[in-house]
Length: 68
Image (cartoon, rainbow, N blue to C red; front, top):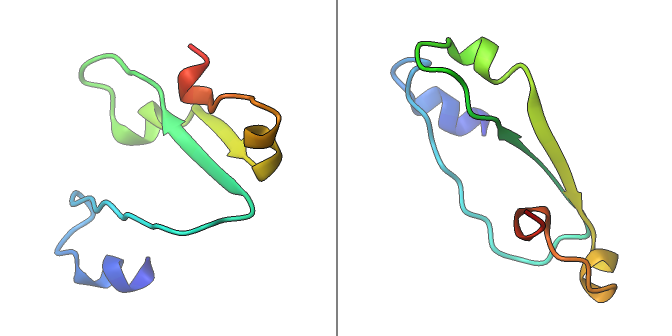
């Protein structure tokens, strides 16, 4: 990611990254909806965090996005 950060002109540009493969564990965060006009630091100060492991799929536990 630091290589991608060096390519940005300023901190207001965002990048997406797609990875394909098999991972032993995945930990990710999701920013919650914020009121219009909320600055980015405040809006992302309370993020939902999730972890997916291979045993989730084997046990038939759906990913968090499917549990709503």
